[in-house]
Length: 548
Ligand code: C2O
Image (cartoon, rainbow, N blue to C red; front, top):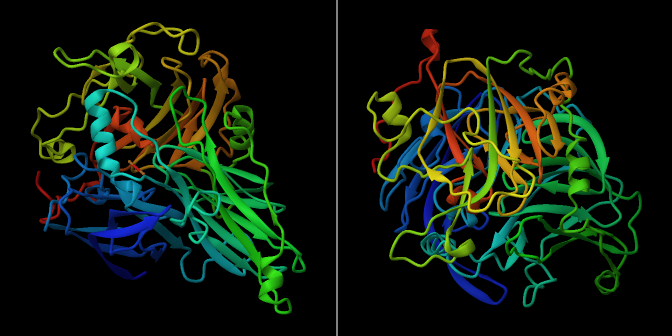
């Protein structure tokens, strides 16, 4: 294992897409940002220097951060953001993980432009549990906004209305030929016939789950969120924001007389507006013989994607994921549960403050919540130092294990269910095994919510539609080979049961990875106490930890 050093300069860059030039926040002037690559066991040392007026912090999405919770990155949770002309060194070791992850800004909506791949290769002398691919490629799905994403969400939080949606989706930063004025900004994947490519897909979009397909080609899924899965084949993938999926793509044995579109567009069942557009890229076979004019005249074939609201396709697709559960990569599913939680997740609304007019539903403000509690980030203090520094006042440790006023979650929603605000957390003893049932609610409409847990992977032991039945549903849990991930969509109008072992001391955010829902408060935090073993102590904060 080695130590790998990176330098991230946060700087502005003019980027032109769809015939519009905007100044965006980037890392090292790149959009999408630079690839970070390491091997399992390596130490990563990334110096982030902020040269822009906006505050920033960087999250290493999916990295366990064992005993390095100060490097996790969510602003106001594990650190205060890095201010202009300040810097912070993220320093952590990648333990027991390999696969495709990504890094992104973790403050306001800055991750719209500040993100990049984080690739962890197996150790030297270790191999993949599948034949070595001919080549590896990374495809990042993203969103392009014509105005400043941070201004968009700030305005929406002011008025209480839903924020503006993006103008385009992107593949590796490029919107592609189906948008006006965008044909020259098309992602092209050039392939050779008869080869196997490993495609590392990352959904870095802010607010949309995306279907992805390549015409006339089939994928073999081999990994999800940097965990190997039992291989299965599919023509269509779905990735929620925060999810990563590795697939093998076997190209046709001879160069076909056509080129193929790869398309991505959203899965959406909610009530509000969304960006209903399609990004296209091109899969192109290299051919030695044919001239370039002949290449140009090849027909383009489009894949067929499911309907925008294809919830049964999505349920069927997600049920195909199983842990590889091999001798080398066993699924360590917690068999017994020390603490059970039942969390309702969904949208709600908040009363309009006096002497203000609000543009949310019925003159209220949009909100989102877990157990009807909306989680505001502490704006001047850092949760981790408050807890581990043994001072108090910024949070309360009374996050309810069950909803306080139960109701028929997926039936006709009660009118005006006002949520309350609270920076409430759950405190767990070291190594508690936890089960959380996540129940979608239909207040303001049923909608899938991609829940992301910092600091841990979890096992998805059960899922279903309608209201969770505590008597019968647990009988059908999969405790043998459930998929292990860090982000999973709570089904629209349904529930999901996850388990994790709280073996990592620190303060760990759990939230919806739709940035708009996080901004509306759909999150909470777990505080995991230090273990008794001397080496389980959370080390003290680094000296350059930013102050608020
Ligand atoms: Cu990928 Cu808390 O985020």
